[in-house]
Amino acid sequence: MKNKYFVVGASVTLLIAGAIFWFSMEPDAVSPAEIEATPVKNGKKTAKSQPRKTKKHRKNATIGKSGNAKSSLSDDKRSKRREALLRLRKNYLEKEAEEIAKLSPSQRELYSALQKAIEASNDSEVLRIIRSMQSSKDWPQNISPFIKHSALNALFAMGEKSLSEIIPFMADSDSEIVEEANSLFVDSVSDMDLSDYYRAELLIAASKAVTDVDTLESLLFELNSMRNSVAVDAIKQLLATGNSNVQQLLPDAIETFVGEEGIKTPEQLDEWLKQNPDDENDDDFYGKKPQT
Image (cartoon, rainbow, N blue to C red):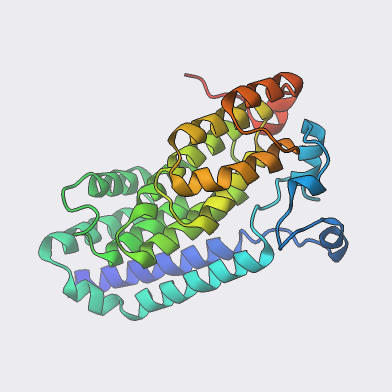
């Protein structure tokens, strides 16, 4: 009974901490003047309404007053995502004791181990447990959504080092887990100060798991937060490996990125890059290329 109360208490602590962390990531407000000055069509920015995409133009378009990249999500879409997440978390919290009671002995042991690692702030152990869970024969159908929910909150709280572990949840068999994973991943990638190399790596990996069109649109907008060479390389990989929804969205994403129509093939992208090479100070702005 003592262990049961410990698990429940630890889980409540995690949920409260997750909520605090979540709302601490609110983006800077956008003034009415900024909104008024942004040309839109059907609620979306269009490539035709933008100047040719030089590096200077794209920096001016993505940098807010604080000097950080603006979120790719509109305030309205972000608000709706967070309202949905809060409803999901409230539902899990209200059903926590009931859900723990329904777990099999092996899954109760898994949940207890995960909660102990979270309570001890042992990130490496949390990652080990989650990776082991994702590679087990029970993944994903035979893992309780309650455990997946706890794992997702733990990954989100860890920040950028755990983003790749969120991706498998984005292709889960449970629609609520997919919704939660998509929201956490998109907001994290959009808000965190990531190098464009890592941003591109995450985009390509996520595009293989995600089918939701709204989520893919938000992720593809992250191309505008990358230096030209990194974005072009990412687009070429997406052209080669992206699912049908990615292929459908890519033409608009490419047009928005380059600022002109008619560029659709890898060869055309290479030619565009010759005319629009990276700036010499891009490392200062986007981060240096990781050492291999």
